[in-house]
Image (tube, helix red, strand yellow):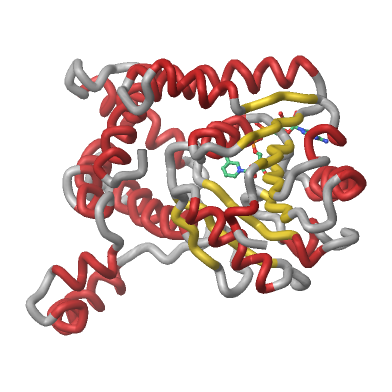
Length: 320
Ligand SMILES: NC(=O)c1ccc[n+]([C@@H]2O[C@H](COP(=O)([O-])OP(=O)(O)OC[C@H]3O[C@@H](n4cnc5c(N)ncnc54)[C@H](O)[C@@H]3O)[C@@H](O)[C@H]2O)c1
């Protein structure tokens, strides 16, 4: 199946992630049908989609008429049959529990066309396990988004032991065609790519703060006004490539022994410090109090600022 054949997507599970996926697909001109277990959950999905559209409109990413067009593309239902009967692509975002994921897949397979691709948003379960009892395990892939999927382009693709390579490729092409940036894991790997990279860095943040080298606020500042600005443009390998006249090779030579000395001094523990929250919470509260007024001093204000900046960045990246 060519990705162009996918005109309608079923989003099964309309919580935090499913509602955002629905906006993502609708923004790219696809018809979406979102399903959840009852009307109460669907009302929450609808409210969340409106909040996402409010932010997109408020920060100039969509006009009022485009917003209405996007909202009009998403239908909601509690009937699985209605949700998946005509879908070529199913994005499952149900709760992160294996038995629930398996039961959702069984319900989907009862009604979906045999050629439909089934993509699970799972953050950590193995596709092989989710599809263990599936009639068509070859059509199942893992497609882990970053929250919120309608704003963060990354999607991490994984296969199960019986996923067909051409299905994974079609899923990859499909996500790319709707403006996502898909990465492919060639082997199963807990935490996938992005969360592992984040955690590796966070271990070092925790260690530096716990050793008294810097405050929570300064660790954040060092990231935001240093590497974070560059990382929003290029990945670390490219930054190395641009950092030395000899490219990445020159940079590796330049770092040489210094890099080894730093590594020898860096954190390598495999259990997160038990008292980290007690240490870090006052630090992050102080950080928020110190922000300029245009950023804000509450969680709500800072989240709004984050979303606004994210939208501006995505416009620069030509992703919105
Ligand atoms: N929250 C995140 O930051 C994040 C990020 C990436 C991936 N994920 C993954 O996305 C998935 C969903 O996470 P979430 O945070 O949106 O969870 P959530 O609890 O907000 O949403 C799950 C939704 O699934 C619904 N549901 C339960 N059974 C169902 C069924 N049989 N049919 C249809 N819907 C059903 C629930 O009512 C709920 O609305 C999980 O697998 C999670 O690991 C989450």
